[in-house]
Image: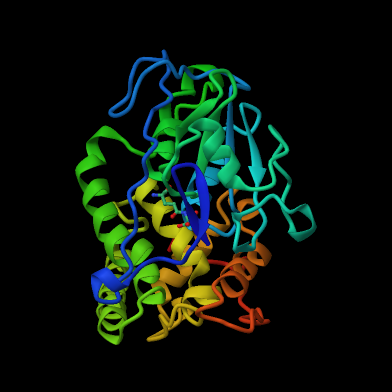
Length: 324
Ligand SMILES: N[C@@H](CCC(=O)N[C@@H](CS)C(=O)NCC(=O)O)C(=O)O
């Protein structure tokens, strides 16, 4: 685990001293947008038009943020349009690597050893964390974006004219509800599990833990009356919650000490996560080997032995009963 400083790799863990033991996630820096006609998006510069075979996605199968982009690539029919390289589940002194012996596809574009080399190829003097996902432009030879919430918005619409797929996971009439739900889910759940797991003070951990379970209990109630988070239509908000829920019992409950209850103990959330897992195309984006191996074997300060637990034994393919 580390970061780039003026293009040089430094092996160092998150600094939580300056924030009283609380984990604070650094904002993504590369924020251009692919759009249908190459006009500029809400941030960054223009010139990234949607085209077949132009863009490449770097992901970890373990990472919940990268997982969102893989789900949208699949659901929006983009697998033949956007190629993918997968990093190794181990993220140790060199950060994310392409070590194929440990389950990476390798870097299909440049044969790099480490993901940080893709960042310095984009900008030799880059300073900051080296995160997945990364969307690379093969034509302009640069990174378009390293912000998953924006990559999924691009995938949601930019390629529609090429693919003929007009499913909309961010429909105009639900945007207010989706945005509000995303804020609740991001602060307390998506990032909340990391705030609990990476806390280095009891206070920071306990605050994150309480906020996490209050939010889960609120959503458990909501899913009692609604099939999906914002009503009867599945949206971006559901897919953003899903990538944390699917990791919950396997990783966050134990490794990140989010153990008030298992997800499987909430009847509505448990049925809901199974419904989303069983959604056509989604199960093949879930890799429990990469998920468990990454967290338990990479965070040596949390789990010094690196031993990956065998359990839990849970059946995400069991009937979900959500139609009732
Ligand atoms: N804002 C980013 C966050 C991505 C992120 O933090 N990814 C993690 C993996 S789960 C990562 O690569 N961490 C490496 C690091 O922080 O050094 C996004 O949503 O795309």
